[in-house]
Length: 443
Image (cartoon, rainbow, N blue to C red):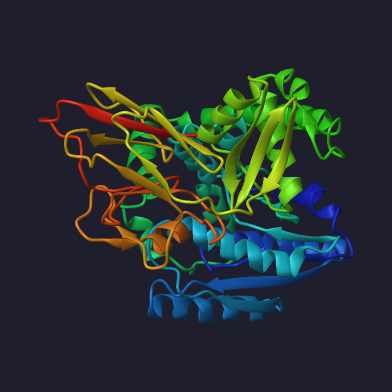
């Protein structure tokens, strides 16, 4: 493993501070050893940072002690942080957010960076995961040797090396024992299935598959960086504008539109923001029409893209509209504050729905719905489950703050049928016996 290929990456931090995410596993051990060598050459301060997630009981605590001993034995400063309460759905995403907060506390200053141990095989696994999520080229090539996330410079010096090369490097340097995360064999995690089954089978059929996939990722990265740089240049045209012309947005190719939208929202909110496909499609639909009526597109924690006349801007939610009674059989559409609802009667469910559309058995649904704000103690029975869950929990699972005032669809007994933008309930479901499907869309 020719670590001199990493020298250019570290030279920029001469005299600065570098923190290595150090779990004690093979990848992070190699990342720490490589960074240590360049710390001596370029004169930057080095700290190994261990984050104990407390997800595997005593195993997590043993790894913390072993990581501290590994760093101490090489004269490397060590720091440990503890995360607790990471339970329930979307665990990996919340753990990433909490880790980023730690890196922002440590390494947001100029001349600082965080080193992570991702390698070539991680990069390929991420490619497959992102393909399954419908990502664009920036998402497919998400792991980069150097990039800034939330104001923190992230370095991945091992990205060009395989897991096999890394383990050989550790052996050459006398490292034969390192942490083995027991959850890496649990195939309820899709990444583990890709690593332990799919990719092994692929290599069995095509021995050079990982090398060829790595070359493709290099090409995808170049394409992504070109698009991102072009989007940044386009964004400079509107960066200082509070309201941006529809003409500007319409002039952009969709590949640039979504990237400029990301820059626009991230800078306006002072937080990293990645628009999903559903939001982007809605944004494109709204900017295609000029109207005196203001249209608000919710995108994060009570913030909206406002579209009116010939301009787009970011607006904060401030009002809670009054309840609206909707006799949907006779009223095809209705408004609640800035949201418009439209119903259709169809023979079968659409192939795809999102958080802003829902379907019910029209003959089992109540004749009258009420559109209201959320209320304290609200619960609904999520589709596919039998027990009620608090709307607060469903909202926080979606990372929506309390001020994200999305409408709720209820009957006259206060039963929630749909928490728009959050979750569809299991009441009046469409089944094989359904003759009429009530399709409701919220815009």
